[in-house]
Length: 184
Image 1 (cartoon, rainbow, N blue to C red):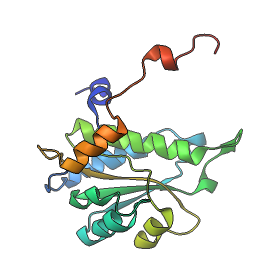
Image 2 (image 1 turned 30 degrees about the vertical axis):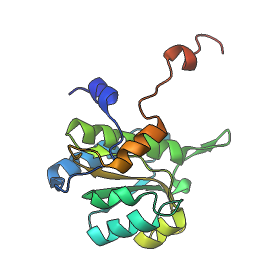
Image 3 (image 1 turned 135 degrees about the vertical axis):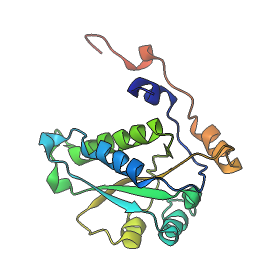
Image 4 (image 1 turned 120 degrees about the vertical axis):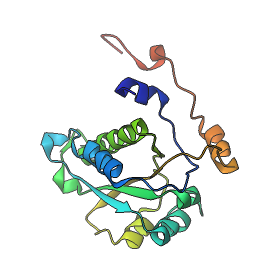
């Protein structure tokens, strides 16, 4: 699979097989994130890799913004929590670039994982304070996103199907709706 094929075929996975991710593959995923571009190459990102089932269970049941909205991550063999110290990045035109830096790095990790048959699901609907508390993340560090990583189950759960429909995951705007040539 080449990069463009990975971009075209990648989808959010919400039903995970219990098969563990091999250490070599997890290392490649993390390396893909490490190699990402960032504001003045400051590489502000920090990642918490969670493999402990009890800790993943706490994240699954206590980190959602709405009750147990992230409960589906409980079956994933790995959850990666993407963080940054905003002071280690830039700020220009009202934009905090730590968010951009982490997003680029995390997306590279997700594409590298997908190329190896490992799924993920970007989660932005979480309670930062609860995640910080569960994982002992210092207060100066911002939690930007988290994602389960694991091999997709052959059959999606009813929850996964419902969320996929609710999110409209397959809908993409045509280029003529998002691209402006020369001027707006």
